[in-house]
Length: 552
Image 1 (tube, rainbow, N blue to C red):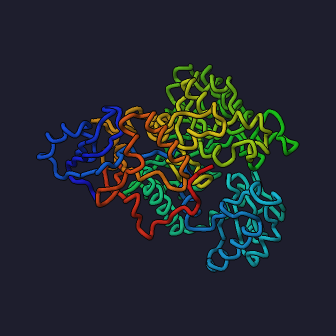
Image 2: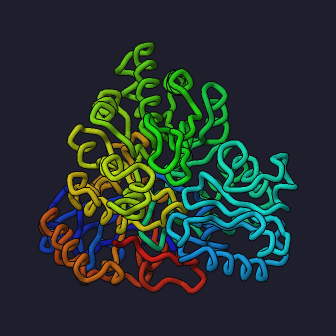
Image 3: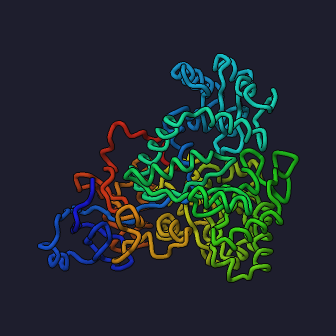
């Protein structure tokens, strides 16, 4: 449904830097035309096509999720999700049930197991999966998507051989490619539609798709971009992670805004593949390095000269060092100002030293980070502490230090690694397990709205400002979003505390309206200047993430 030409929204709480006490706004042709007080709104009442009584609802910019794998998210929503399995036995039961329910799938696909949270800390064996599936091909990615367990039948479809245990690195990439190749175009489109519909229902107006040859496929990527262009819903900004000159050419060919995203310098902590300077506490090695300093420098040079963003996946401290040294080498060749202007990105950037943070600021790097990682794996007894020891783990994800240094932050979920949950992400950043890493709710909200636009080089988007060129229909940035109440699953204490922080952070805008906010417009929320979906009364056919909101 398209918005009328000119709409007046009034009697609400409008979160806009143009007026901290705004209660009304005018949207004309999908673009913010005016923001101001209720009294001033009377002057517009007779000249608009429609007036919407917000009845106290909160109006904000739509969220931007700066790191998403859309098809994988949709497959998790519509397929086998093991993220809530409390034990190995429970996971195997879910595999049996899913197998019986999908008799015609060429390859069974599942995601989300995390043996570190199960009694015994043991993943399923190949023999157990063979029995649970009746010998059918099965691919089960770990929650961090950097390792997987599979059945013998799937291994027989590859050249990997009959290996046991979780597969990582090249073996994992080989079985993943084979498994995803079995997904039909119709299945892929269904998964993408499910993911984007779910994002819209949460108030996400834009997602950054992080694709690449080791993650998805060219057809997957271009199909998603076409779908997002043709259908109403969240905008998709696409990144393609392929190296150097070849990567630059391919990114341009496919319609990507950068040769960036998950260009892997290392893996993940949960899979023991993040690359560290010192060995893991619970393993006698330092992880896996996929790119060195020279490769990083070559990629940054190629992208900068081509006028594209470069970007890297780097989690471990050794991987971050490789990125920093590589970008610095590129700056020495091309000039610091030229490299800074390109706004290259680092995804995840979890293990940061003070020196690395200073280098991010110096080199103009954007930190595309996921606060939900700390909510899920942080704390004295969390997975990070088991992998690294408590002292090293306590230094992870230092959001406050990044902000103090002037490093741009863009928040995302890395869905399906953690669920699409923008308010949960804001909450996770404000209630980081390590107090000195916490940021204000206002800063977290900004990182999850305007931060995502700044990460793609747009400083004029992601806010409710008159004349904002990115709030128009389809071609612009996110338009206003009506926000539902804090999810009850947060818990009463956290809800009161979160609301109190909102009041302190943004007086008069993110305060009283937050808890009682509700959708009053008959068609719900607005994305890109169009009413898309009611964020409270969702259609029954909209897949919902079965995982609860992120809490502690």
